[in-house]
Length: 441
Image (cartoon, rainbow, N blue to C red):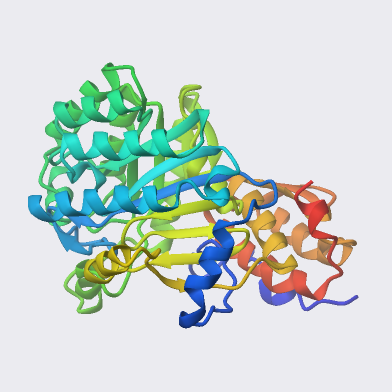
């Protein structure tokens, strides 16, 4: 078989690709008709799905401030609104937790996302985590992550999370540079951010992870290097290095469009990433995925790894997204609609897709491997030989190390991983695929 590979070749001089693609986890596109969603959900709840890892995602759609780069802002933080939300969120869990679906497999990771989960009160955080532990079959070593910010996350809230069973905190720092932080809508200074993480890590009762972001406005090699040095000197278990994903609808996206703000170009973003990777490698950190590093055995990053590999995910809360047996779904983003459907005794689903397919299975298998930095193409195609010229060219350009159909991404390859993933996703449907069972074997 002859494939047109040349359009996917990397440039041998300069940047290998013109820009860095952003590829979201693949999901089937065939929607379920809105009138059919309630019946499909009820049928799904009566099933015990094929063996697969199981996750839980809870969405907390409130923020005290709107960070300029964030596309997830939904509702302003108000005490009365969060109290009502907490009551309804626990009701949503209670009304379906006893079903065969929800009791049929252990939950390996729970993730509180948002929004700002740590904006909830101590009592609310304790109630929700306790409800999950009481109602769902959490595995003995279940990773329970509470995502949050420094703002409002006081000792009382931290104590409540720990006492209820949380064992991982993911703190969105983005940068310690006070000037850049304030321009993005973050209130805490460099000194306050360092002090917070120092105290949280010294408790030594849960994994503590912080997010750093590269490609921010006014970010320089010097400020990035200082961020890495601060991370090295803090008692952290893990760190994420994320590229800024500029969304046109955000305040920052609009400022860039109107030429009021300039961002580092893709070459500088690549250099930020490579410097971060080399810095952490020298300091003995273990790279778990393309954007995540662990320093201690306490940090596993289970939720983020498993979700990209196609794990089943139960979703709760307004605006939460889940995936069960290959069927993706999203709950109502409007709080009013979410409340109304729960009052009617229904799961408040606003969108749902059709079930799993062989295409979905191979795409998720490939996606999970690329995210982990290594993959064997013989897992999903009968004969990888037609792809070898492309893999060889990528190796010559320093993006991977090949061992036949198996490859390991280099640090540069990890930065450009989404471009290579997209290329392989375009090419593989033209080859003869193996059975889905082999890809998950």
